[in-house]
Length: 60
Image (cartoon, rainbow, N blue to C red; front, side):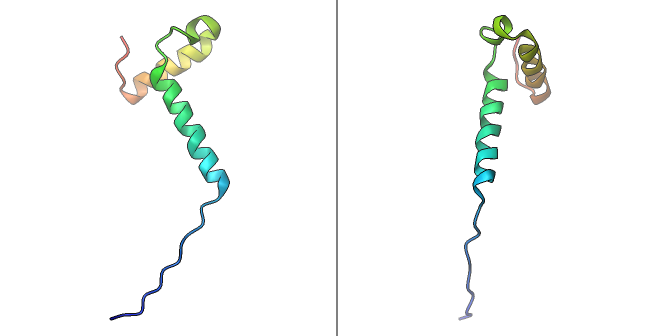
Protein backbone atom coordinates (compact mmCIF):
# COMPACT_ATOMS: atom_id res chain seq x y z
CA UNK A 1 0.00 0.00 0.00
CA UNK A 2 1.15 3.48 -0.77
CA UNK A 3 0.80 6.39 1.57
CA UNK A 4 -1.05 8.91 -0.56
CA UNK A 5 -2.54 11.88 1.18
CA UNK A 6 -5.09 14.15 -0.36
CA UNK A 7 -6.08 17.62 0.64
CA UNK A 8 -9.33 19.37 -0.09
CA UNK A 9 -9.18 22.46 -2.24
CA UNK A 10 -10.98 25.50 -0.95
CA UNK A 11 -13.22 27.22 -3.46
CA UNK A 12 -13.55 30.96 -2.87
CA UNK A 13 -16.98 32.44 -2.17
CA UNK A 14 -16.73 34.73 -5.21
CA UNK A 15 -16.48 31.66 -7.45
CA UNK A 16 -19.83 30.41 -6.12
CA UNK A 17 -21.35 33.85 -6.68
CA UNK A 18 -20.10 33.96 -10.27
CA UNK A 19 -21.50 30.47 -10.88
CA UNK A 20 -24.91 31.39 -9.48
CA UNK A 21 -25.07 34.63 -11.48
CA UNK A 22 -24.04 32.77 -14.62
CA UNK A 23 -26.81 30.21 -14.15
CA UNK A 24 -29.35 32.99 -13.57
CA UNK A 25 -28.22 34.77 -16.75
CA UNK A 26 -28.35 31.53 -18.71
CA UNK A 27 -31.83 30.80 -17.38
CA UNK A 28 -33.06 34.26 -18.41
CA UNK A 29 -31.57 33.93 -21.87
CA UNK A 30 -33.07 30.50 -22.42
CA UNK A 31 -36.50 31.22 -20.95
CA UNK A 32 -37.40 34.65 -22.29
CA UNK A 33 -39.94 34.28 -25.07
CA UNK A 34 -40.79 37.95 -25.36
CA UNK A 35 -43.74 37.96 -22.99
CA UNK A 36 -41.90 39.85 -20.28
CA UNK A 37 -38.85 41.57 -21.66
CA UNK A 38 -40.23 42.76 -25.00
CA UNK A 39 -42.64 45.16 -23.30
CA UNK A 40 -40.42 46.27 -20.42
CA UNK A 41 -36.97 46.38 -22.00
CA UNK A 42 -36.95 45.73 -25.75
CA UNK A 43 -33.15 45.95 -26.04
CA UNK A 44 -32.68 43.33 -23.33
CA UNK A 45 -35.19 41.13 -25.13
CA UNK A 46 -33.29 41.45 -28.40
CA UNK A 47 -30.02 40.60 -26.64
CA UNK A 48 -31.48 37.50 -25.03
CA UNK A 49 -33.22 36.54 -28.28
CA UNK A 50 -29.91 36.64 -30.13
CA UNK A 51 -28.32 34.67 -27.29
CA UNK A 52 -30.91 31.95 -27.79
CA UNK A 53 -29.95 31.69 -31.45
CA UNK A 54 -26.25 31.54 -30.59
CA UNK A 55 -26.90 28.70 -28.12
CA UNK A 56 -29.06 26.85 -30.62
CA UNK A 57 -32.28 27.09 -28.66
CA UNK A 58 -35.36 27.03 -30.92
CA UNK A 59 -37.54 30.03 -30.31
CA UNK A 60 -39.81 30.56 -33.32
